[in-house]
Image (cartoon, rainbow, N blue to C red; front, side):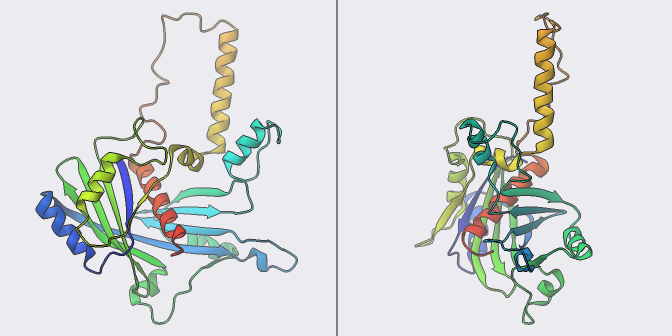
Length: 300
């Protein structure tokens, strides 16, 4: 798994997936690798409906099932972002040791699928689906309870590229364009060269080339900057552990324990850099971008 770029084809026609498949196979010598199926749900908190509790806005929760993992994005519009807290501490508007109970966004990875709904039911948690399943919904949607489906295919181009293309549709059958994702397998991360918004010319060019030549096609790149992604990945326990390690290193230096500059170990050098686009980390970033794109369009 490697570096990934995502794009939305907002006004894709019903035969858009077939057109992309034909373009990849005929013009890129690509091959079909398998299906690409994702399922999305959205929930809202009903805490504001509790007598005696007055909240100006409600918390929301979005879930995306990808293979055996479910990625969950919780948002509390009343909570600060981590960037806000860091800036407030820098401006001395908040004490240096200020830590809110939670930040505006919390991103989780759960397994197996269905465990979250079971937990909410057992706890009688005050969360309800944003769109209830109607009686006219297709049978597969009635059993799954999913609000939105992304169904398509995965294509391979040579040994370096994977392209995922899927039709976005509501559970009632209404089509909402397409999602396209290009993955450059040899590169687990992009440390230099991306634009400030996180775009990559390498990925953008590939996504543009696999799109069929359709007049008036509306396409939008879906990106996130590295600074924003660092906020998403933030973990309180990891930060406290890092601060403790820095303090211990300074203490060793003060005590003269690290004077021998000719001797050093490699046991502390990580084999995998945090944030690399590999394994479940790649899936997490992809899921976060997909949820963000659909949410910004008001589909969720």
